[in-house]
Length: 141
Image (tube, rainbow, N blue to C red; front, top):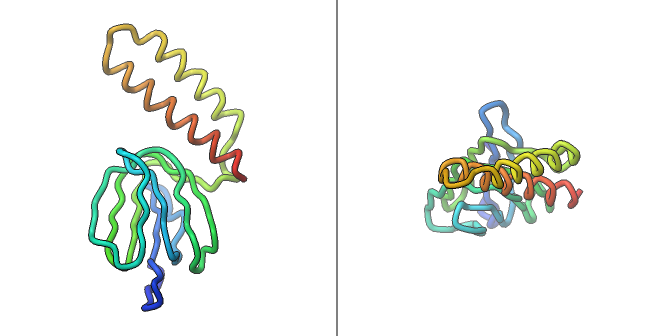
């Protein structure tokens, strides 16, 4: 785990089932909670939240300013540490834009064919969000 210090830096770790994407420090972390974006700063009150799909933005610290795409999982915010446990986490350079465009097209097709099936509709809507956020993240390279 990245070292914490008394200079207002958070230890930040983004983890997936396959790897540790980043283990660094930052002055601030913006992240997509399921209910909207939130920002964690050093000394923040403890929080456990469900992760949505979108960009994690790190500001300052060892990371400089860095961005990552994440989708689904959980985030734990403690006064000196932010741990993001994500189903998917990618650097913008790891995103295949053509594949994300195809994912969006497939999800939109599934959405239009969902009819009255609420589960299919919700699944397609979530896939559309992931694809749109991947496309946005890849455009920020």
